[in-house]
Length: 52
Image (cartoon, rainbow, N blue to C red):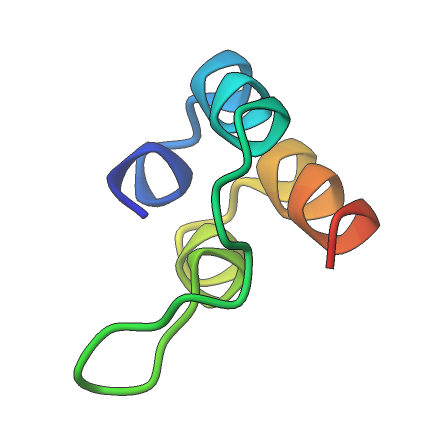
């Protein structure tokens, strides 16, 4: 989630390749995709959308 929040596309890609759960959410119900979009990281958000 932190990688998505900060727009680290390479880290997000690696984590997804290793089986990270793209639907995991915070205590507030926010997913990595939510955070990427909120922070304006469109490339990261696109990667997460493809894997969701």
